[in-house]
Amino acid sequence: MFRSLLILSLLLCSSSAWSFCGFYVAKADTKLFNKASKVILAREGNRTVLTISNDYQGDVKDFAIVVPVPVVLQKEQVHIGDPKVIDRVDAFSAPRLVEYFDEDPCNMRRYKTEGIPLPSAAPMAQKKAADALGVKIEAQFTVGEYDILILSANESAGLETWLIQNGYKIPVGARDLLQPYIRQNMKFFVAKVNLKEFEKKGFAYLRPLQMAYESPKFMLPIRLGMANAESEQDLVAFVLSPVGRAEVTNYRTVKIPSNMDIPIFVKNEFGDFYKSMYQRSYEKEGKNAVFLEYAWDMNWCDPCAADPLTPEELRKAGVFWLNGGQKGQGFAPPQQQSNVYLTRLHVRYSRPKFPEDLVFQTTPNRENFQGRYVLRHPFTGEIKCKEGREYKSNLRKRMEQEAQILAQLTGWDINNIRKKISFPVMASDDKSDESWWDRVFGDDDED
Image (cartoon, rainbow, N blue to C red; front, side, top):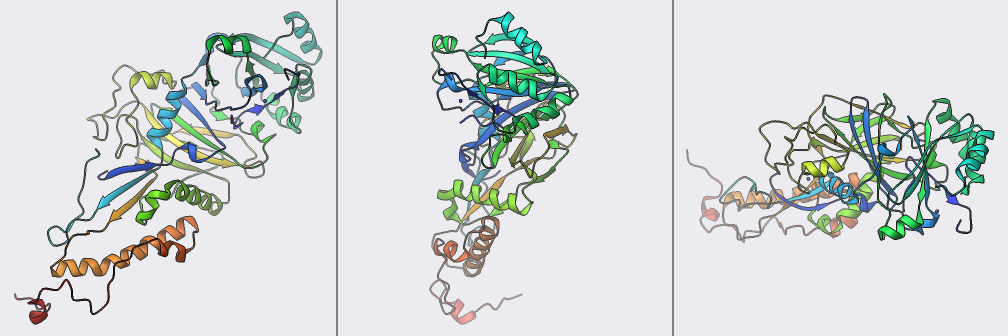
């Protein structure tokens, strides 16, 4: 469903009336969160290209959106995006699960490091009606399968009335949410599906909308989206910048717990693990923090959840400052940093905890960070050495520690976690792996 992070979803009323040195094994992309919205913000200076994902799954004739924008947009500033690019950025930056395999403790005492394999009314009549309500149609055009209006308004009641008269069903409380944007002299990007164009193009889904504008405001207007929200909503914002890491300035930006060793069985339950861990972290932070899930130079990754985006994909994601030198290097660090840095921010918001829109800033910080969780597989071969016995002795402690970490991260019951772990048998009199001469010489060392 197309979630209204920054969008006021409207109902058309007419009867035609809304993760390295290990193997990458899993990732936690936005598909885990049923109500997650995705946006890409490509930002340099005051210039922004905003891409809004669109996973609306209802009847397209019932789809419409209103998005506050800082300036009047012309047709040339609105574009149809490529949904595959949003999926690529999501997959590339997703929190990840990695796994390592213990070496034979009798041969090596280190872990092996493996490489990674709207509008149909007559224009004049529509304009007069808008004028009477203090609403001005600043621009009107069709892009792809969308009919788009750019509106400005003198006050929220007039705008609300105009929307209702033109076939939009406004959520209760929308008037109060519209007013702050009017005071800021913001405009309203209103889009609905042009059914004729949609059928002509033959798509089975609505494509993303992109808009390019120039403004000192670097924000996402999430308040409107809460007007008709019955519960908390998830938003993942991918910020692309030539400078460095992005952060939210009016709410705390905190790192998601990362680089934790957790039990092996989580490999088959990674989605449940990440959702539980996120929810617990969200509650620990008072439900009003923005979580950093990924921050990295777009030119490489380690480990790679997916290949870095190509220059063409970056262009489609809205990166307009590329000079042609950008080329993904995979997991090997490049000789020079690129001029595209990706930040992935995940916010779960509700009206009481997020009364303000999200305000961003980019920083020169290019320190790498990723949500990364580690599985360590015990050595399963035959062990016949003193180091091996020490290894087995420590293994159970390690597994218990992993269980404790998992319980702390997720809130899962520790006893249920232990039941899923194959702890090694370590009876104190277990001498099965002991050499016969060790039974004579014991642990005595000769200098």
